[in-house]
Image (tube, rainbow, N blue to C red; front, side, top):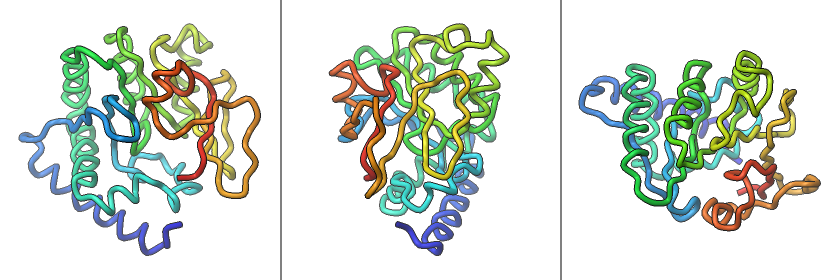
Length: 231
């Protein structure tokens, strides 16, 4: 559990890093990770937590593993700052570079949006959907607390998940105690089970390793409600 001063220190550090990136924006490119030990050989793109979470992180910021990673590793902080700065200043280039990287990928065609951060706004989400449509050979997934953005998109594009959302993108509504999850269209959910809490029924027990879920045909990439222990 992070103390208030730790969160304040992170916010100051990430703001400074984003501002520094903006000063050199013409020479920067999107930081796209090709995978890591936790999520396997999965491309992933992240943004700065808190800064891009739409105010919905009040219930989880004190145990956010990505804030912890930013504070521990300078390369993580810089990557989050670079991507956040680029999507704020030149969103066209941000999404174009991600699309180009996906089209160059010859194997392990999986993309996870936002190991850190969240859907920034409605325009950003529209571009995520178009990205999935443009790369139908990819399995794409993301977790979000920006329920209202996704719900608005579905409402304006047919009124159901099947009509509005490409079948190759899995959107998991991230559920936290103390945060109301408005889910009228029935999106799959992802829950972090905190210490002492009871595991929810009818959920896939996530091991924390995305590659294992991809290989088994279960879990978030396959649009199955899941839960993971606090980590």
